[in-house]
Length: 215
Image 1 (tube, helix red, strand yellow):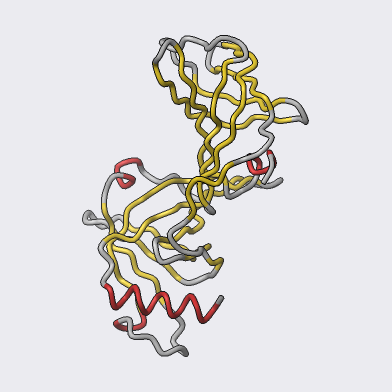
Image 2 (cartoon, helix red, strand yellow):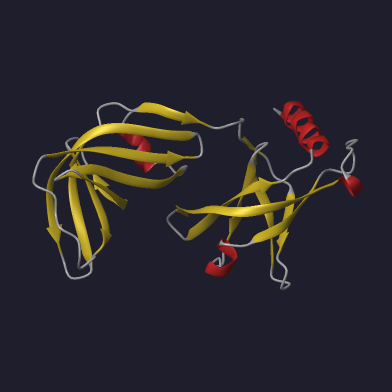
């Protein structure tokens, strides 16, 4: 695992963590650019932000769909602009894998919908699927209120396969985890991640058998 992990599409969140004057700081940053010596991260300008000293030792924590990775780095310098703060950081030399997924995530397309109590509903196709949750493409902006609420998730399984799900559907509560932007030359799409909440044991066993069968 090398510094290229920062530029992968499955990277969803990057935290820069360091300690200054005995106080732990955690900055939620975005990668702007990197070369073979430095990474250039940005964050929204916070008027209360006090820049760390040059060459401050820090940890880079990278959240991905495959798990969480940590690397020791140095904050080489900080530039403060009107609307943005830029932090120049040494290139990560190696990562430690500190947390793996509870189960494998398999790329697989199935019809999915998530409906909330007030009638708001999201419809799409799954991008990948695991025992713990699901991700799917969503072209619109996810309203912030629904990022805090529990919705009823439905995944429709193929009718030609024998399933013990009622009506061939997995129905369970779900909660929003994160949004990952997927950029290409023509557009920017959003990959939404939801976790399953309170799934019945028999449904979890059926889903496990299905994932084993398609893997």
